[in-house]
Image (cartoon, rainbow, N blue to C red; front, side, top):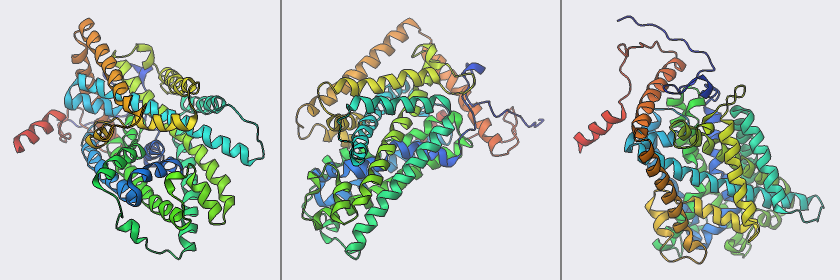
Length: 484
């Protein structure tokens, strides 16, 4: 059989099959660092350090670092499963595609529907967090005029939209830069805290004094929210270089790096607050308090700026990830076809981006009528944590939390029922929709493997006679069934 070298232009993407040239995103635009930046920014380690650790401490106390370690290990098993799919397929909105291939199109659509929920409320947390720290920055400049939070929401959302609309590479580079600067400032402050005490061992923390298994289960709900987002690199499969290699590496590296950072910062913040005879749970801005307590009050401004731009990056990464899931689902007629359009020059899913940012922005703007940014931040984080993991789900019911948190699971259930009803109606109206999704995913998966081979500099036999492809999802399922 004759082996030939296929050639492709840089503008071609792995999304092929039923999609024409007008639906192609900017292929091979992102290397490993920028792909990993997507996941790291959505996890947002800065958010955890500046706001979430005290909330976790309220449940787990001296075992806060252990709760984050447990959450990281628990999610590591999820990553190992996820990467079995990431090594075989690279498409925009890949989590949606993975589920559709593994569990069927109906499950895939519901998975995409739930991810849109998740990214929406994490994006809401990003907008409210930006507002909180932007107000702190303004105040540190000597401006004591109260600026309505809605203005900060709109500023952050508008800049996010502009960057995402223009270029995915610029988006990823900005998120990488902003998060790196923010984390560097926080780590510097952490070493100041530890150095002042001679780097002692905190035996109360190492022995997790006073923490019970029940406390741990409650705290893990918070740690899941802190760590969720590692999967978002998979949504950039159509725009990554060497996607079958770089995306699995980015997913696992982002979880391990940010998980280690959160364990370290949990230890430092609990240690620093205890040595100043203050309960960490009472501190709304723990790093601001600790910078003053340890005589480095000048850290307040860079930490606030770092947190502000980090929350901006969080919303931007949610916008990039969620819009690409919407983009993929639109191509399968789940959403209107207009949402599957690609900008002719920028090669970004501009209609999906524009629509999705309005959804993310609308939530905090409406809630601002009834509450404040800090409350919306906490509620958004809780709502985003409803993923298919038993520990956070059970922790949301037992014991019964206060109102309105106790009704959040039912709000999420209502969202899923709306999605299920919409899918049922689509299937009744278009009986062939599931078969079309399966056929398109098969074609697109083969195209992504060929594209990966080209990126790796391999000669590709267009008839697949020269080298066996990785096992298909069906072959993998058959092998696992046989092994069982």
